[in-house]
Amino acid sequence: MELLITGGTGFVGRPLVERLVAAGHECVVVSRDPAAAGARLPAGARAVAYTEPWPAVAGVIHLAGESIVGLWTPAKRRRIMGSRVNGTRLLVNWLKQVQPRPGVLLSMSAVGIYGDRPGEVVAEDSPLDPAGKFRAQVCLAWEMEALAAQAPETRVVLLRLGNVMDPAGGFLGELLNVYRRAPVVGFGSPPAMLSWISLRDTVALIAFALENQAVSGPLNVTAPRPVSQGELTALVAAHLGKRVWGHLPGGVLRLGLGAFADAFLDSQVARPGKALAHGFQFNDESFAAYMRQLAD
Ligand SMILES: NC(=O)c1ccc[n+]([C@@H]2O[C@H](COP(=O)([O-])OP(=O)(O)OC[C@H]3O[C@@H](n4cnc5c(N)ncnc54)[C@H](OP(=O)(O)O)[C@@H]3O)[C@@H](O)[C@H]2O)c1
Image (tube, rainbow, N blue to C red; front, side, top):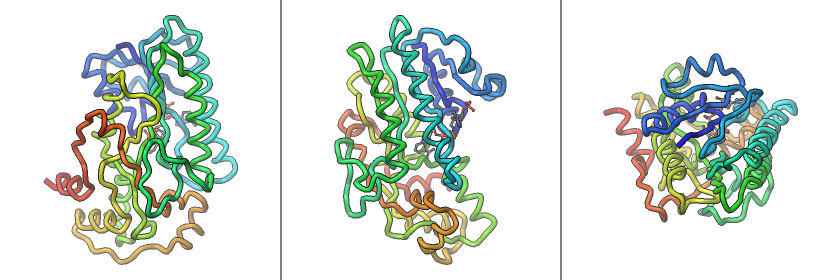
């Protein structure tokens, strides 16, 4: 398949492009800086700018968006929302007029769309965040833009990612960096549940959704077994041979991080119901086993 991919230079995008190229797909990565992107992409993938004409392709994978990490000042919120809404609109408008029309659009979203749901298990058909917090507002607006591409000839999949774990980056990579240099103090409230997924399963499940015609609509990209913030801190500490000194109280975290603290404090169990129903096989089902195999 010839594929157009945005955000192909990122933490998830790079290994995804690598896997797709290895599987024989032709990957064109749309980047804000194609020269820099070209140097980071695997041989076999090429980078193009947002401002140049894009080739007609069989499928589109849309990952790009301003990082949510950092203080959510009004300007940062505008960048988080605007990069996703405007970027998706641009892509979908192009997709609707290109001939032949791409057969599939896989567009990023996140489990943040479900909000804080202590004691619940949410699936793809569950109601969205009842509190309508910022993360959910962004995901909803992003998904609505992507759904505008839906047509008999174009399948749309909304990838609701959990927290993607890999020792080389993302949340786990940052935690390992910090905890290597400082005492281990947990973020978030220990009983709060985190829907996580390993990077290799993320990439495999996105490729599965690309190739499996039966998958459409929202897709929880999460591991079958969530982990509590308390267990996660203990497992990361054990991996480094360190002890846990305690957990930052939510109020302190909110003082330091503002509303971004919700990413650590909200409790979410987002079940990968659709992935399991379609027969996707996870490599990493539990966070404990995932951390154990990292040590091997
Ligand atoms: N990682 C996770 O745990 C996680 C969880 C849930 C959802 N997600 C979502 O999944 C997507 C990919 O995640 P990731 O961790 O790979 O993100 P990432 O490493 O931050 O990469 C995102 C890519 O988007 C592009 N980008 C960055 N800022 C942008 C902006 N202001 N406007 C337009 N494009 C911009 C960049 O590509 P260029 O510089 O080449 O243009 C970058 O490589 C993101 O949309 C993220 O919100 C990630």
